[in-house]
Image 1 (cartoon, rainbow, N blue to C red):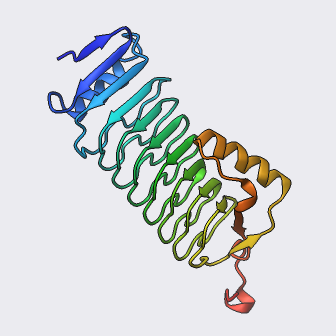
Image 2 (image 1 turned 90 degrees about the vertical axis):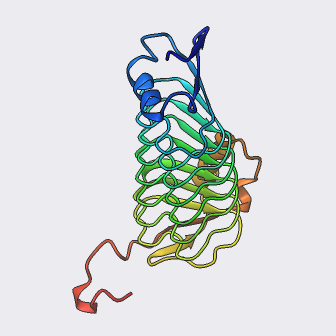
Length: 235
């Protein structure tokens, strides 16, 4: 097919053409054909929708998506008008991925840049091994979120589960609600002026109207940074 194209807008029905064909078109033909907006119909939980995009285009996925939607995104602004499975926006490099519903495990894992917004809850391991991306969750996150996060920010407007920030490096977590427990080497610290500015900017980008003063800052105590042989690495 060529699915319908009107005035720079592509409309693609996944019941008519596959995800593989969609991604090939987005990678090789979208910019060449002057596409600036894409609407994807009937995603029906399919995996790998709109992965590996590298163009400043707007993509709307009209329904629920499966695993790895928006993975490795560069530049594109992707909105999922539903829920998503594992690993939304994994290894995101830039641009924005927004989920209007709920997200399963490992949301935004290993991202190097860009912004992931989840308007409702995210499951466990949200933001594991972040390397510079920002994640804003409108609801709560599950256990071991931001595990081994190295850079970037995780903002949780609801509550956090067990083991939050276990083995953190330089990433910073802001939590508005209750924290069930902190992971190894994570600690609550006073909010500084830069924290309020950073948090206010992230909340504004995400479209949430919470007050930065209502959040707690969680960061690394840095005790895991060096091997302590004399004390058998006990803390």
